[in-house]
Amino acid sequence: MNGKTIPEVVGSNALLVGRKEGEVNADCMVTLKTGDGISIQCKLPPGESIDSTFVQVFGMVSGNTSVDAHSIIPLNENFDLDTYNAAVDMMWTDTHKPLFM
Image (tube, rainbow, N blue to C red; front, side, top):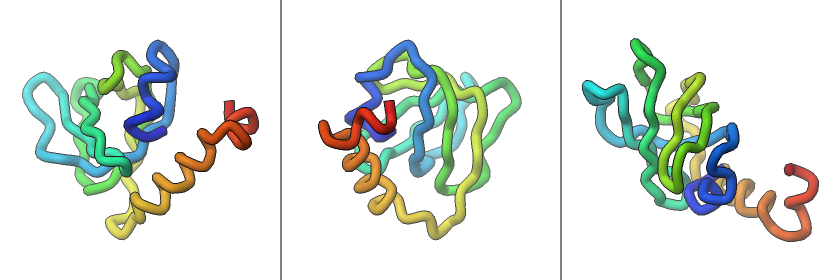
């Protein structure tokens, strides 16, 4: 998923990859910037933290720009978010979308 595809799956579980922007606040919220530049508010499970710049989040999409995370996977610091975003864009074309939905 990327920022522009998140609104299409509100109420469903999804995988999202993004760059951490700032620190986790007292409400267990952190902002992730997707490859297409959209800021997503991510609610982490209690006690969870993010120690890497790039993460994969699995969780329930709770709004057009919000995800309630079930799990967080740290990604390599050299993760290429632009290439990932290009792949997501390709998967959401009319030609390829049926393969991934």
